[in-house]
Image (cartoon, rainbow, N blue to C red):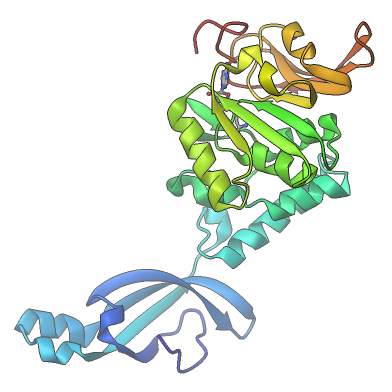
Length: 303
Ligand code: SAM
């Protein structure tokens, strides 16, 4: 479609376009240039000639038709984000909020948040909420964590390029992508999910966003993954009834494990465990949190 003149929001614009592009009556979204800069708007498109041609049964008139477009501006706070540019803007605004609130402090974590598009890790009907600071459902009773919580998780892990990391609880794959971004291609990332459909969802999301090199495994993650141990870092993203001692065994000396521990869907605390030597382990609390249960041999027995 060639735009013949600059659109201004709330004005009616008229274009000549090949009919093939449009149904007689349709609505689509577009980014257009307004005098105030790029604006995302929704365009209600009414192909008047097309409608008449269809009503009168005159297909030849459909070859070229006049399309009337009624652009109107939709505000992001109404939950409607309709272009990649808008997603990027919303992402930057979220990052700025998390910096202001003190959740994001380290440049490498901020950079990872900037690079990984959270909206690509959500079911299509929830993408418009990707850059609100809230957990969101991803199906099978599971959630993608709130960005502020993810910032706390990454901060407590102190990830470095080249590290070997195990995540337990793939879900959407978003955390795994952030970890992958931080350890880089010289690092290794394994992520375990117990629900096969979610493992597939996470794997597909990682693939389409360029993190297809992350290894997604379908297993009970409460037993860790001995075959690839020892790990520099282990991140558990579902709540364990107690600090998972057997996972500490799979850590390198100098390694760290971060996990929520607490009651089933209730009071929970974010713990960071540092393995200083085979016998010396220190544990720190990093505040309250709320996660879905870690279900498996060394976790809860049911959801
Ligand atoms: N990290 C995920 C993301 O970025 O979307 C969100 C994790 S969600 C809060 C917790 C996930 O842990 C769920 O997908 C759940 O199925 C998974 N989970 C629970 N118990 C598990 C276990 N024993 N092994 C592997 N995954 C488990």
